[in-house]
Image (cartoon, rainbow, N blue to C red):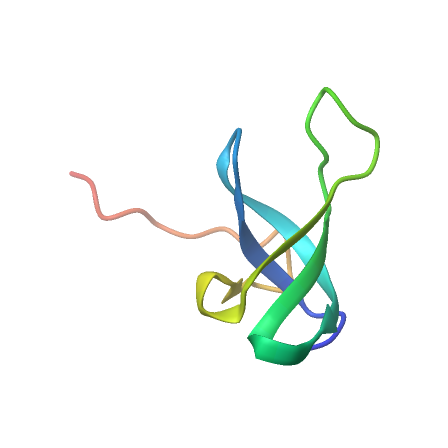
Amino acid sequence: MDSQLVWAPDPVDGYALGRVVDIGAGNLASIVLASPSKTSKTQKIECSIDQVFPAETDLKKDYDDNCE
């Protein structure tokens, strides 16, 4: 999962895109967010790997929603 694009918990936006930079002891993932919040240029977070979800690598891919 190292360097993979993922959805990670973000205190401002709920979840944000980022890249895994390291997975350490106790299954803690270090993630650099792809779109940092307005207050910082680069935001690095640490969270449990259980809170990290894989993201689609093609960011321009379009999906239908389930709303009618």
